[in-house]
Structures are given as structure tokens and as C-alpha cells.
Image (cartoon, rainbow, N blue to C red; front, side, top):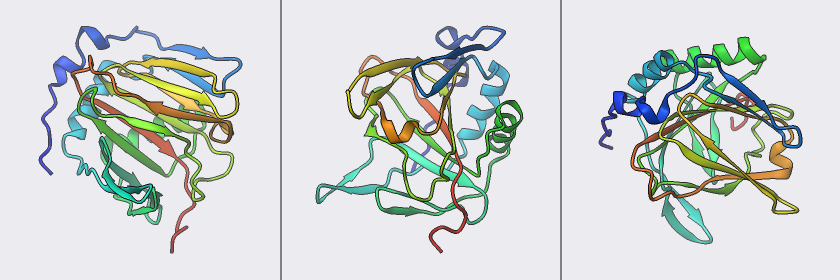
Length: 216
């Protein structure tokens, strides 16, 4: 698949400026921690440059008996043996890229967050999206948190209570970190809806802990 070139300076322009000090927002009644401006612009730039070499794909999945191509592109990196599945499709793990692995190590230092894999999603503009779902695949380690890093365009990330359907929206900007704490995936769903006014790409890293060799 042809790789889209990213305008790095534009992605880190006025829309995505961050404060010099990260802002921690612990939302008392929600199982999430939102840290605005977690990554400095130089760290974001290193990742965005690396992203241009990632082998993104947009696989077809089966939904209600019909085949559909997902409305975004993605790639899965991690430790050896840490394959995963997406909508029944086995995704074989690729070796860690340099800066993605450094980001994993930073999350471990800062939050003691263990992860052996990362799903990287690319949304070329606001027409691409992610529907309602929860990350509760059986290969994911019980009790583990998921760390989500945003690069590029600001997009709305919405969580929804499975029982009450209460919703909370987070306008995630470039450099923001959102940690979804266990057991969020049991009670809440999340989505990235279409936003027609969004014209720039968004890159999202979600660091996860999976059971090695689960599908062997």
C-alpha cells in the first residue's frame, strides 16, 4: 500500500502546541487518566518521522456476514510470540521500531505500565474512524491497563457506559496520553467517530499486555 507522506511541521503547528509541563487530569468517577502534553514536540517529531516507514494495512473483516475494509490503517508491533487477533483475524507481531520501543520504556518508567505490544492506528482525515468496541480480547492480560498516545490531528475520543449509555468525550491533542485502567473494558466501550472538519492525519499508539504464544 502506498504510504501517505506526513507534513510534520504542519502536524506540530499551532493546533497541536502543548504546554511545557504535562497536565494530569484524573477523572474521579471514570477509569481513565488523561495527561495533556505528555510528549514534548521533539518526541512527537521523532515518532512521526518513524511512522512514515511503518507497513500500515487496512484489512478486510467480516461484520454480520459481510466483508468490509476497516476505515483506517493499522500495524501491530511487539515482543516475539505476541500475536493478537482483530475481529477474528490473526495479526502476526512485527519487531519493535526504535522510537515506539523507547516510548514503551518511558511509559514503564513513568507509570510502571507493562506492555509487550502496541497497535498503531492511522486515520488519514476525519472520514476515517473507529466504531464502538471494548478491548477485551482473551489474549489480553487480566488486570492490565492500556495506554493510548495521540499524534497529529485533534480528534474526539468517546467512552460510553455499557449499562447506562452515559458518554464522556475527550478532545485528544497531539502528545496527549490517555490511560484506560482495568477494568474499564468490562464496563465501558469507546469509539473515535468521524469528524468531517478534521483534514489532517491522526496517529494513535495503544500499548497493551498480551499473553505470549496465546495462539500457538
